[in-house]
Image 1 (tube, chains in turn yellow, red):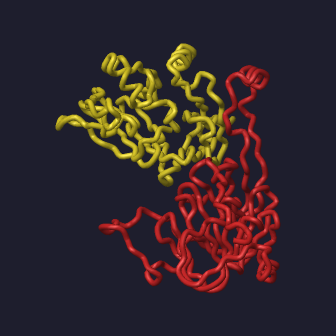
Image 2 (spheres, chains in turn red, green; image 1 turned 60 degrees about the vertical axis):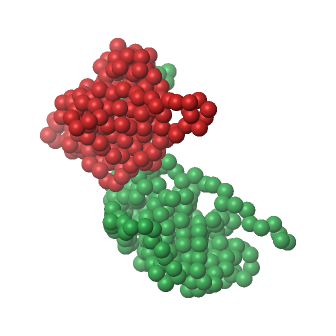
Image 3 (tube, rainbow over the protein chains, first blue to last red; image 1 turned 30 degrees about the horizontal axis):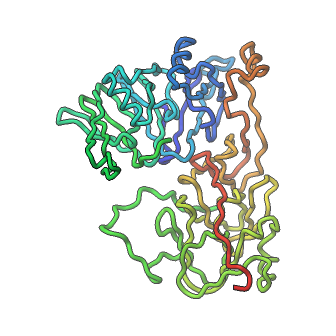
Length: 227
Length: 239
């Protein structure tokens, strides 16, 4: 895995010549070696159509490509680079994907390996109208970013991140504002517990919950603050 | 320069809150990652508003306010920052904290260390404070302990390294950094278009401080610089 954790708010990426990492622009803290930072016009992978898709979906976070170009002596002769990432004092969580899909908001992405496939998903495609409402309640909007394949992802959260496994033993309920990301084969729906108390403004403050079931993992932050 | 090991995961917390009094408070050590207890017997310099509590008999004198002229002439050489600093004088235990940022103490033995002025909380006389030639940084020279805050734990690296200016907390024993500008991505046709039109944006990583030579560089785990905040006005004169 190219990402190693330095402390709760800082990671280090080892980049071999010819390898590539995408990261949020301006998130580099320090680097060693012949590393180049190139702003990515398309905002990630997949060419022009993907870029348009991201723009339309409002999932186009400014990204940059971080790579170590192979020198004249070939990849074997170029030293590899080390880059440290961190952003805004947020806690950072590293996830190693081995073929499954990670669903995360684009502005929470700190860095991810170039080997991952980046995509955009319509919230309505998971749960129809309720999916759209869920997107509004969690602050995700109508679309979310997906990363699939093999590789490492580092994303940010306000406060520390806890991982809750989602298994056959029953669904996991998460506060929509504390939800960060999830991965795997997960069905999610927004459950409401609205009653007359909410209507008169004396609700418990926990009227909306995200119910996740299936097989995978959900990442929850120890805060209800958005990034 | 010697520094304490980075605060690892706190030991298993005892049930309930820990109650400290004047005798159980640590002496010149961290109470928790966010508060530091100074064993005061004499004088310490501290930045205004960073003291949160004290036991004992301590009084605080503004710098340039008279009685401590000799001490200040010895140890404080930055008129620009004089208004932000006070001298704590007396005996007792004094707790320092800063907006729940991580606090650490560092010890210099006949050394020098340069630190971002907003990150420095307090230092012992024995160190003397000077302005660095890099704007916004202060240099401490001499022998003694100082206390500094950072957003996230401080990470020590060794040169050669290039550091984002905002992630830099300070550096010790190595020569002052130089500016490094990186416009390598502005090459080629696409780079030309980008340079001419601005389409595609900048990477945000064009400018770094470059460190070479022997020493240590202190990095803050984030790019958000500690913002200066009003620490509250003192009492009106005459009250």
